[in-house]
Image 1 (cartoon, one colour):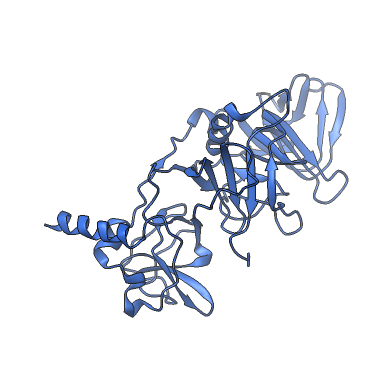
Image 2 (cartoon, rainbow, N blue to C red):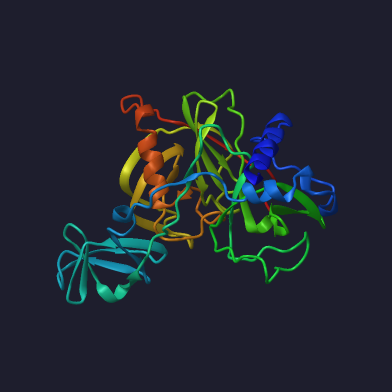
Length: 343
């Protein structure tokens, strides 16, 4: 009987236009959030998506190390110094070690004590979306938390513990002091700053390719589309205030499976990153690429590029292979926008 009731409630949701809609702002919790009852909230609380398979051979195959300061490079262990890398946000890939030395390239050896411990890349990955879309927008938690029992309240000790990157459905918003508190289940509410919401956008007229990527700077969410249909969504990290990622319509103009990135020479923000994987340049020197050096997706933190996890970056690179025209230097369309005002 319960399943029959759920079915009729689901049909009612379809008829009333509740499917694949934007997050609604509702009057208050005492009125029942957006007119939905607890049966629907419970049944749709877990988004019906397919988790992308984590590629262990991509995430764990390389030995990435942070450089402690300046980095002298030698042509052999104990050999002749050939160059020095300035101090900055620098990472190298260790191919092998020999005593107190580490090889970072052909004929390139550095003192092992100039490097930090091995970096463990993020095991986060996005999700593939069902062909018919989702009944409600989905979101990820940006920190570990227990939902509040009502909008504006403290975390409720009896509510379930949600680790960071947990996936939830978003049923509506009640504003407290001008900020949204989103309902994710019966008697479970989360402040807007603790969630990153994935909501599809209409295909812009300027998009030139059948496959395209939308990047929401406000939510820090990327969604991949085939025509009008969203097929994949994930968290990213875009540029900080001082190095913003530009909004607009772009085409990928260069791609590299792996390559070095560096910039801001002789400035305090100098960076040098060895073996950056799955890079797709779309706005001059700004690229969508894998980032092995952090696990902070869903929050802005880059020098302007769009960071994705290694698994996600590889998926996006290979998914867009059929669009790439090497001779023309033209790839997939990328639409960068903000669905809200970042604070």
